[in-house]
Amino acid sequence: MFFILSKTVAFLILPSNLLIALGLAGLLLMTTRWRRLGGHLTMASLVLLALIGFSPLGGFLTHVLEDRFPAWDLARGAPVGIVVLGADISPKLSRERGTPAVGGKGARIVAMAKLARSYPNTRIAYSGGDASLLSNQLPEANSVYSLLDSFGIARERVMLESRSRNTAENATFTKDLVKPKPDERWLLVTSAQHMPRAVGCFRRVGFPVEAYPVGWLTGADANVGLSLVFSGGLAQFDSAAREWIGLFAYWLTGKTDEFLPGPR
Image (tube, rainbow, N blue to C red; front, top):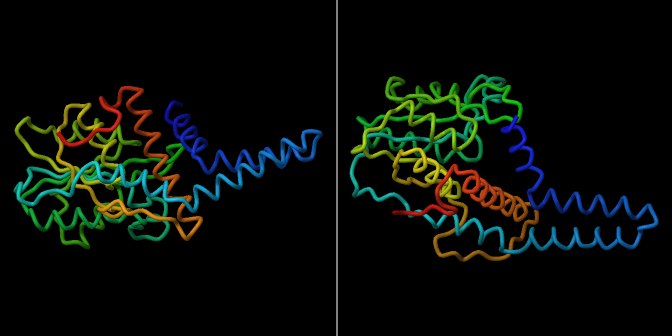
Protein backbone atom coordinates (compact mmCIF):
# COMPACT_ATOMS: atom_id res chain seq x y z
CA MET A 1 0.00 0.00 0.00
CA PHE A 2 2.82 2.42 0.87
CA PHE A 3 4.45 1.75 -2.52
CA ILE A 4 1.20 2.49 -4.39
CA LEU A 5 0.62 5.65 -2.34
CA SER A 6 4.16 6.94 -2.89
CA LYS A 7 4.01 6.33 -6.65
CA THR A 8 0.63 8.07 -6.89
CA VAL A 9 1.79 11.07 -4.86
CA ALA A 10 4.97 11.33 -6.95
CA PHE A 11 2.86 11.49 -10.11
CA LEU A 12 0.35 14.00 -8.78
CA ILE A 13 2.88 16.49 -7.45
CA LEU A 14 4.77 16.87 -10.72
CA PRO A 15 4.74 20.58 -11.65
CA SER A 16 3.00 20.10 -15.00
CA ASN A 17 0.25 17.98 -13.44
CA LEU A 18 -0.31 20.49 -10.65
CA LEU A 19 -0.51 23.39 -13.09
CA ILE A 20 -2.88 21.51 -15.39
CA ALA A 21 -5.06 20.71 -12.39
CA LEU A 22 -4.95 24.39 -11.43
CA GLY A 23 -6.03 25.37 -14.93
CA LEU A 24 -8.89 22.87 -14.95
CA ALA A 25 -10.04 24.13 -11.56
CA GLY A 26 -10.00 27.64 -12.97
CA LEU A 27 -12.13 26.61 -15.94
CA LEU A 28 -14.68 25.01 -13.63
CA LEU A 29 -14.80 28.10 -11.43
CA MET A 30 -15.48 30.22 -14.50
CA THR A 31 -18.87 28.51 -14.77
CA THR A 32 -19.80 29.63 -11.26
CA ARG A 33 -20.11 32.94 -9.45
CA TRP A 34 -16.34 32.70 -8.85
CA ARG A 35 -15.74 33.49 -12.52
CA ARG A 36 -13.11 36.13 -11.91
CA LEU A 37 -11.06 33.87 -9.64
CA GLY A 38 -11.37 31.09 -12.18
CA GLY A 39 -10.04 33.37 -14.91
CA HIS A 40 -7.03 34.32 -12.78
CA LEU A 41 -6.26 30.67 -12.00
CA THR A 42 -6.52 29.65 -15.64
CA MET A 43 -4.29 32.48 -16.79
CA ALA A 44 -1.75 31.76 -14.04
CA SER A 45 -1.69 28.11 -15.06
CA LEU A 46 -1.02 28.95 -18.71
CA VAL A 47 1.69 31.50 -17.91
CA LEU A 48 3.52 29.17 -15.51
CA LEU A 49 3.32 26.25 -17.93
CA ALA A 50 4.81 28.46 -20.65
CA LEU A 51 7.59 29.64 -18.37
CA ILE A 52 8.50 26.09 -17.38
CA GLY A 53 8.24 24.76 -20.93
CA PHE A 54 10.37 27.44 -22.57
CA SER A 55 12.75 28.48 -19.76
CA PRO A 56 16.19 26.94 -19.04
CA LEU A 57 15.12 25.97 -15.50
CA GLY A 58 14.57 22.31 -16.34
CA GLY A 59 17.99 22.09 -17.96
CA PHE A 60 19.64 23.80 -14.99
CA LEU A 61 18.03 21.47 -12.43
CA THR A 62 19.04 18.49 -14.56
CA HIS A 63 22.61 19.72 -14.92
CA VAL A 64 23.10 20.12 -11.16
CA LEU A 65 22.20 16.45 -10.70
CA GLU A 66 24.19 15.19 -13.68
CA ASP A 67 27.32 17.14 -12.75
CA ARG A 68 27.36 15.76 -9.21
CA PHE A 69 29.43 12.72 -10.19
CA PRO A 70 32.12 12.88 -12.91
CA ALA A 71 32.53 10.25 -15.61
CA TRP A 72 34.25 7.13 -14.33
CA ASP A 73 38.04 7.13 -14.61
CA LEU A 74 39.35 4.14 -16.61
CA ALA A 75 42.69 4.49 -14.82
CA ARG A 76 41.13 2.98 -11.70
CA GLY A 77 41.44 -0.43 -13.26
CA ALA A 78 39.08 -3.36 -13.51
CA PRO A 79 36.37 -3.58 -10.85
CA VAL A 80 35.28 -6.82 -9.19
CA GLY A 81 31.69 -6.28 -10.23
CA ILE A 82 29.20 -4.07 -12.03
CA VAL A 83 25.68 -3.25 -10.86
CA VAL A 84 23.32 -2.06 -13.59
CA LEU A 85 20.04 -0.50 -12.46
CA GLY A 86 16.96 -1.22 -14.53
CA ALA A 87 14.57 1.24 -16.23
CA ASP A 88 15.65 0.64 -19.81
CA ILE A 89 13.51 -2.38 -20.67
CA SER A 90 9.70 -2.55 -20.88
CA PRO A 91 8.62 -6.02 -19.66
CA LYS A 92 5.11 -5.56 -21.08
CA LEU A 93 6.28 -4.59 -24.56
CA SER A 94 9.00 -7.23 -24.48
CA ARG A 95 6.39 -9.90 -23.84
CA GLU A 96 3.99 -8.58 -26.46
CA ARG A 97 6.65 -8.13 -29.15
CA GLY A 98 8.61 -11.25 -28.36
CA THR A 99 11.91 -9.39 -28.10
CA PRO A 100 13.50 -7.11 -25.47
CA ALA A 101 11.97 -3.64 -25.86
CA VAL A 102 14.69 -1.18 -24.88
CA GLY A 103 13.37 2.32 -24.24
CA GLY A 104 14.82 5.79 -24.33
CA LYS A 105 17.23 5.14 -21.46
CA GLY A 106 19.10 2.42 -23.31
CA ALA A 107 22.44 3.96 -22.29
CA ARG A 108 22.50 1.62 -19.29
CA ILE A 109 22.21 -1.43 -21.52
CA VAL A 110 24.91 -0.12 -23.85
CA ALA A 111 27.19 0.51 -20.85
CA MET A 112 26.58 -3.02 -19.55
CA ALA A 113 27.59 -4.53 -22.89
CA LYS A 114 30.64 -2.26 -23.16
CA LEU A 115 31.86 -3.00 -19.63
CA ALA A 116 31.22 -6.72 -20.00
CA ARG A 117 33.50 -6.82 -23.04
CA SER A 118 36.13 -4.52 -21.52
CA TYR A 119 36.33 -6.57 -18.31
CA PRO A 120 35.60 -10.20 -19.23
CA ASN A 121 36.28 -11.49 -15.70
CA THR A 122 34.04 -9.00 -13.94
CA ARG A 123 30.79 -10.07 -12.31
CA ILE A 124 27.59 -8.30 -13.36
CA ALA A 125 24.34 -7.79 -11.47
CA TYR A 126 21.24 -6.41 -13.19
CA SER A 127 18.69 -5.01 -10.75
CA GLY A 128 15.18 -4.41 -12.04
CA GLY A 129 11.87 -5.70 -10.74
CA ASP A 130 8.30 -4.64 -11.35
CA ALA A 131 7.96 -0.88 -10.83
CA SER A 132 4.38 -0.69 -12.09
CA LEU A 133 1.81 0.95 -9.83
CA LEU A 134 -0.08 -2.27 -9.03
CA SER A 135 2.99 -4.53 -9.21
CA ASN A 136 1.17 -6.79 -11.66
CA GLN A 137 3.73 -6.85 -14.49
CA LEU A 138 6.71 -9.09 -15.20
CA PRO A 139 10.02 -8.05 -13.59
CA GLU A 140 12.26 -6.14 -15.95
CA ALA A 141 15.21 -8.44 -15.18
CA ASN A 142 13.33 -11.33 -16.82
CA SER A 143 14.00 -9.79 -20.24
CA VAL A 144 17.74 -9.37 -19.82
CA TYR A 145 19.05 -12.82 -20.73
CA SER A 146 17.95 -12.64 -24.36
CA LEU A 147 19.79 -9.33 -24.65
CA LEU A 148 22.91 -10.92 -23.21
CA ASP A 149 22.74 -13.61 -25.87
CA SER A 150 22.66 -11.00 -28.63
CA PHE A 151 25.66 -9.23 -27.05
CA GLY A 152 27.63 -12.45 -26.77
CA ILE A 153 27.73 -12.22 -22.98
CA ALA A 154 27.54 -15.55 -21.15
CA ARG A 155 24.44 -15.81 -18.98
CA GLU A 156 26.37 -17.32 -16.08
CA ARG A 157 28.27 -14.03 -15.70
CA VAL A 158 25.14 -12.09 -14.87
CA MET A 159 23.08 -12.26 -11.69
CA LEU A 160 19.50 -11.01 -11.92
CA GLU A 161 17.77 -9.18 -9.10
CA SER A 162 14.05 -9.10 -9.91
CA ARG A 163 12.34 -8.16 -6.61
CA SER A 164 13.08 -4.43 -6.44
CA ARG A 165 10.42 -1.85 -7.23
CA ASN A 166 12.39 1.31 -6.51
CA THR A 167 15.93 2.58 -6.00
CA ALA A 168 16.05 1.83 -2.27
CA GLU A 169 15.07 -1.78 -2.95
CA ASN A 170 17.63 -1.93 -5.79
CA ALA A 171 20.33 -1.30 -3.20
CA THR A 172 18.97 -3.63 -0.52
CA PHE A 173 18.23 -6.62 -2.72
CA THR A 174 21.36 -6.28 -4.84
CA LYS A 175 23.54 -6.28 -1.75
CA ASP A 176 21.77 -9.44 -0.56
CA LEU A 177 22.35 -11.02 -3.97
CA VAL A 178 26.03 -10.27 -4.58
CA LYS A 179 27.22 -10.17 -0.96
CA PRO A 180 30.09 -7.74 -1.64
CA LYS A 181 33.23 -8.00 0.46
CA PRO A 182 34.66 -4.87 2.15
CA ASP A 183 37.72 -4.71 -0.11
CA GLU A 184 35.85 -5.22 -3.40
CA ARG A 185 35.28 -2.46 -5.96
CA TRP A 186 31.87 -2.37 -7.63
CA LEU A 187 30.65 0.03 -10.32
CA LEU A 188 27.12 1.39 -10.28
CA VAL A 189 25.63 2.08 -13.71
CA THR A 190 22.60 4.34 -13.93
CA SER A 191 21.58 7.59 -15.62
CA ALA A 192 23.63 10.62 -14.58
CA GLN A 193 20.52 12.43 -13.33
CA HIS A 194 19.59 9.49 -11.10
CA MET A 195 23.11 8.81 -9.81
CA PRO A 196 23.03 10.95 -6.61
CA ARG A 197 19.93 9.22 -5.25
CA ALA A 198 21.17 5.78 -6.32
CA VAL A 199 24.59 6.20 -4.71
CA GLY A 200 22.92 7.49 -1.54
CA CYS A 201 20.77 4.36 -1.33
CA PHE A 202 23.73 2.00 -1.81
CA ARG A 203 25.75 3.85 0.82
CA ARG A 204 22.82 3.66 3.22
CA VAL A 205 22.76 -0.15 3.10
CA GLY A 206 26.53 -0.41 3.44
CA PHE A 207 27.35 -1.21 -0.17
CA PRO A 208 30.02 1.30 -1.35
CA VAL A 209 30.03 1.73 -5.12
CA GLU A 210 31.89 3.77 -7.72
CA ALA A 211 29.62 5.89 -9.90
CA TYR A 212 29.50 5.10 -13.62
CA PRO A 213 26.99 7.68 -14.88
CA VAL A 214 25.49 7.36 -18.37
CA GLY A 215 22.74 8.96 -20.43
CA TRP A 216 23.52 12.64 -19.85
CA LEU A 217 20.86 15.13 -20.93
CA THR A 218 22.90 18.33 -20.49
CA GLY A 219 26.37 19.42 -21.53
CA ALA A 220 29.41 19.56 -19.29
CA ASP A 221 29.64 23.37 -19.50
CA ALA A 222 26.21 23.99 -17.94
CA ASN A 223 25.28 26.07 -20.97
CA VAL A 224 21.54 25.53 -20.77
CA GLY A 225 19.43 27.94 -22.79
CA LEU A 226 15.83 28.48 -23.70
CA SER A 227 13.91 25.46 -24.91
CA LEU A 228 12.46 25.89 -28.39
CA VAL A 229 10.14 22.91 -27.95
CA PHE A 230 7.53 23.46 -25.26
CA SER A 231 6.76 19.77 -24.66
CA GLY A 232 10.46 18.92 -24.46
CA GLY A 233 11.17 21.66 -21.95
CA LEU A 234 8.18 20.67 -19.86
CA ALA A 235 9.21 17.00 -19.90
CA GLN A 236 12.76 17.85 -18.86
CA PHE A 237 11.54 20.02 -16.01
CA ASP A 238 9.18 17.28 -14.81
CA SER A 239 11.94 14.69 -15.01
CA ALA A 240 14.31 16.83 -12.98
CA ALA A 241 11.59 17.77 -10.51
CA ARG A 242 10.73 14.08 -9.99
CA GLU A 243 14.36 13.35 -9.14
CA TRP A 244 14.68 16.31 -6.76
CA ILE A 245 11.44 15.29 -5.04
CA GLY A 246 12.77 11.73 -4.82
CA LEU A 247 15.99 12.97 -3.23
CA PHE A 248 14.08 14.91 -0.60
CA ALA A 249 11.65 12.06 0.10
CA TYR A 250 14.43 9.47 0.41
CA TRP A 251 16.43 11.71 2.74
CA LEU A 252 13.33 12.48 4.82
CA THR A 253 12.42 8.79 5.21
CA GLY A 254 15.96 7.64 5.98
CA LYS A 255 16.61 5.80 2.71
CA THR A 256 19.69 8.01 2.24
CA ASP A 257 21.92 9.75 4.77
CA GLU A 258 22.39 12.91 2.69
CA PHE A 259 19.98 15.10 0.75
CA LEU A 260 22.32 15.40 -2.23
CA PRO A 261 25.00 12.67 -2.15
CA GLY A 262 28.24 13.37 -3.97
CA PRO A 263 31.74 11.91 -4.38
CA ARG A 264 33.71 11.07 -1.27
